[in-house]
Length: 286
Image (cartoon, rainbow, N blue to C red; front, side, top):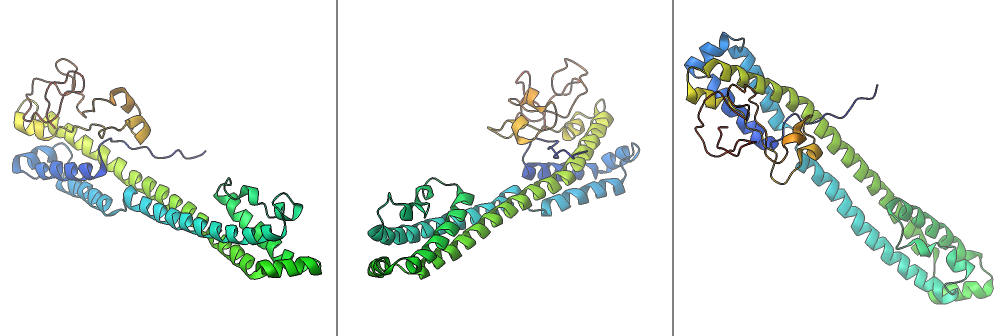
């Protein structure tokens, strides 16, 4: 069975998740929190393991970093195509002094594809130009050979086009491999980030349940607010199933619904006014 791509279980940017995880884990190390959580299965050892997972996550290459490898290869490719195009224009200009552009000899170069071809076709066109160009200055009759010589047409410039065409094709492969490294990096990061995030969410749920009727401030400390990044549709960005339902408003990992069923409930007042309830717009906690 084909493995499906890993989809992000969270919507916040990775950098925000790393800070959030550090914050929540720091709360667990307060004396009262440690004792309460230990009795609910969240031992110091288990929390340290979770912390190590987030530390490892922070050391992994980011999408932005890996995407730069793709962009660098694309930039080299574009510059080389411009350079090869100039060589081809110069060479075909010389050919055109001997054969008009409607002749079979001129058309054999495939020049009509020069500006309309995609990159793989352009690499093949370089091969064609090199092959035809190397043959033409040595295969004609005496009159043609004299005309080629007068135009300055030699096999050498077509050999150069072929060599640079080979380099162009190698750069296309470099782009594909850089894209593959980027995609693999994304999947590897998500395979580490998703379980870590789910464990963090589970820890937060336990923390909230411990303090919901005991300590408003500590309850607020364990709330996770996970909004979609500004201007981003979580359904497109790889959010977990159901994320699109609240794409425009954000999501809170609080499903206690003890009061009204909206966002963070249970009669616990917010300590911050920085966020907003995803349904009512009222201020919420983290």
